[in-house]
Image (cartoon, rainbow, N blue to C red; front, side, top):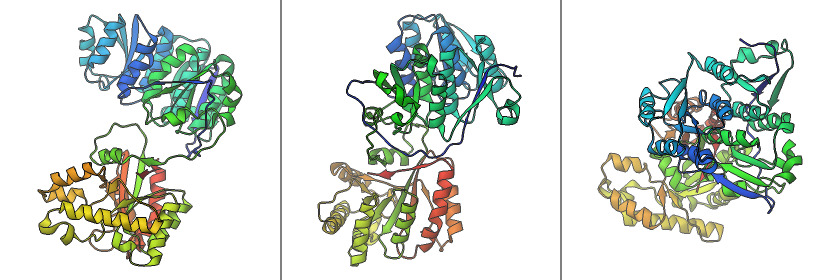
Length: 529
């Protein structure tokens, strides 16, 4: 399938990046292309900000990246925007934008299973022609697009498995006028490429380094007056921005929120950068990060998530950003036998967690009080798990006593305040047995309880995965790990329930393997605030 020619192959081994952030010079202008969701962002990135009238547009799925990747060189060829769609119906915003731009023809990239045939009919009903670029599989689709573009400047190849590398390659290749091909691992192997004339492998220790090496390879063909920055763990924002980048020949820099550009090949170009454009919403690349990317002043990364967002995660009412996040939570502590072991393991792995503490357990002895200080000193967050944890007291008649519950929350806050020597308040609580158990029992006082939470700016945090260390008979570490794997499944965001109270030594034994498993699945670790 491949002829001899100039072939650039991009690959990488993904590892966790050291998070660093920086401060930007006052002369640099920051802009953001981001909207309520990835579909609105795709319109704002190129259409409303960069277009008046166009003959063509490229329509791709916002739910997967493989086919959509090849929309970038196609958009470059016709100098048109990439518009993301859910693939089912022609969204009114997309329809209005196509009409506003006076588009004559839409290129659809992908199979009917990705972008439905109903979409074709809906586009045609607006008096806009369309052409679907489709082949039996994504490899042949990439070849079809490459042939459609007809470039004599060589080609690039990348594995479909690592989308940041492909996007680095595709957007950078546009500056050189090169076509791109999707390849499997066999085609990308060193044994194959060493027999090709003028081939070169661009590879880094992680996606960010590969991104930088790819941009640096073509630095002579790239303009550094401006730079685009986007999150390196979600494809939609960078994909929709790639067409805009291709038009200007400015580079895209991937960040995991904190990338020190001055310490990379970008460093020598920083002085010539006049403006920095962020692709995506605030939570993808926070404003503080966008403002601090271009100097070498290190600051501490905030690894916490807002309680309201986490509560929506539990309700499965959140918009995916492609980032796999795990929140390790521990209930019923502190204990002098298990909590220190948990803290030691977390420290050795440089992971922060959230501890839901019981007031009476804190007051049991001086060592328990010192553990509260250590939890805070080590950078973990503390949630309130009532003072007594006595179901008969806080749920008399199997109904939550809202006034008593609030009283116990305040009592535990006071206990912690006495330990740390200053006022302590937390927005996060966890009901003994979980809020879900109150719903299961059809607790008639839940509405009043919800009002109490809102009035006090508090959020109950349940869980969507657990190790089972409080279910039935005692389980050994391997059984606990198995429960974690079963309940985590393929969730993007995981709030994992474990316990650090007395008798949970097996939880401490299982924790290193649980952490290893979650890391292997690509999860980052965050706390709840």
